[in-house]
Image 1 (tube, protein in one colour):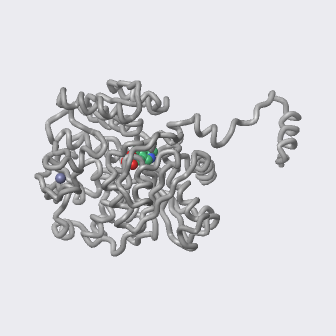
Image 2 (tube, rainbow, N blue to C red):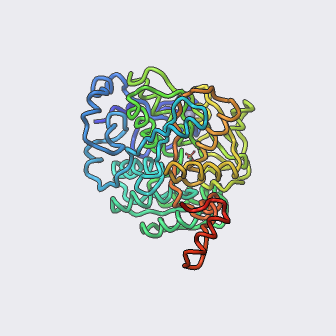
Length: 415
Ligand SMILES: *Cc1c(COP(=O)(O)O)cnc(C)c1O
Ligand SMILES: [Zn+2]
């Protein structure tokens, strides 16, 4: 039994039954939001009860999820969620913050936060009696779907734009997906996948179209809250592409608030690239969003035509949030910076941290604030940009005097 009650359109308010295959609003085409019986959740689950729970995956928050627990139990699943929240005091000090935590979601089984949505998609497809799932993606949604579907024994059709980095494409091939590399941008890739899904009746794991994906992504917010004993920080910084991740984070926090688990909500720092920031631009200029070019190395957030702008803009506005745009140089610098604390993120993965750093430097957030920065994807997915960020290693012939000489020349003599 689930506490999910209905799917409500964020645009016109129309309410629909939360069937496993529900997609967008039948009246206006708007994106749907899953609503729960929060009083029921309150009675069934408390923070104390949660503490005693053994399950160390995103499914530990079952009461907050729109699924049939028996179906979840039946599927062969990867271990998604319960990623670490690191307290990084040295970095907090450097940025003038009171406290700083980094949530490393790159440790998920296919190495990005997208696993939370794909694990959910596999469950909902199962509930609908379907075992073929399709999506289009800039990379991580695809690789996570391919991996989580492979674990369940399901078939996938995956449409990626040709610019998707090798690391991500290699995951798709290894997980045995049917991969279609589309000669075009993300927008064109998305369109082709939508037409094919329509034609062949596959389960649709496309961002935003499927309201359950956000319910999977919201578990990152549930975890952050639980890991902080339900005492929320002042801010949470996160990178934004289609807008589903920031929307999911915010939905998780709002659900916790509605069920009485937390008594205040943090402000969300929405970070995009200066080369592609349609959502931040709309909020900053207080007008409807418009398409933008996709000019950034952060491929996972190079989304000129966002699929979920309404929920993303709601998250920023409702939380009294902040918009920050960062350059590719600032993204590369953040990769190197987090590396110094043992955390390796891909460009879009560290964009939230790059934005946080910039917000601190520009005085957009007060000194002494408490902040969580979410790293959304692992750096091994994009080693070319990692080398760009950190440089090539020293090269020399295998002779000790050469080693000593080289370090002396570099100005850091060996000791
Ligand atoms: C998809 C993705 C994002 C952004 O999520 P959206 O839902 O597209 O806004 C950020 N970082 C990484 C690593 C991603 O894969
Ligand atoms: Zn509607």
